[in-house]
Image: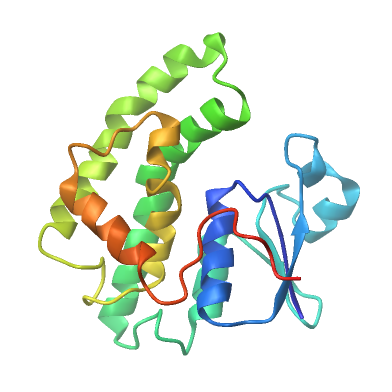
Length: 204
């Protein structure tokens, strides 16, 4: 059985949880408490020397890291990864955007506020992340004004990658009030068959 090592409040772990559920895969959950140093333990570092969650361990014991790489692997030959080469490259394009233009500002701000308790000494750091975070949301808004989903007008792992931290962007201090197309897209994703919310109970 597949085993997912992760933190239940992590958007990167939620991406994988959501796709596993949509694909109706059999899998089990192993909680890693990152604030207690769980991702730095010698046992965990054998799975991922980079000391980050999520990690997906396959049935044969091989471990795969990096949330978007895990999504890509799981989505092969499924409806969540287009067959057309250009559309598939567009999926990777939006996943790269998520990693380099979205997550460093929106997800990291959420980490500072939710995980670290919004300490006063990080106020300047949070303020510096506002403009680039809103710029990423504006790019998404522009795309979603005329498109139901990010690639090929269908729900794909590009949407899952961006949904994970966008739907909790306000926890990082980013209001979505100025982004109606983004809000409408969030609602579409949340009503797709098989959707589960973040922090849904893991499989028994």
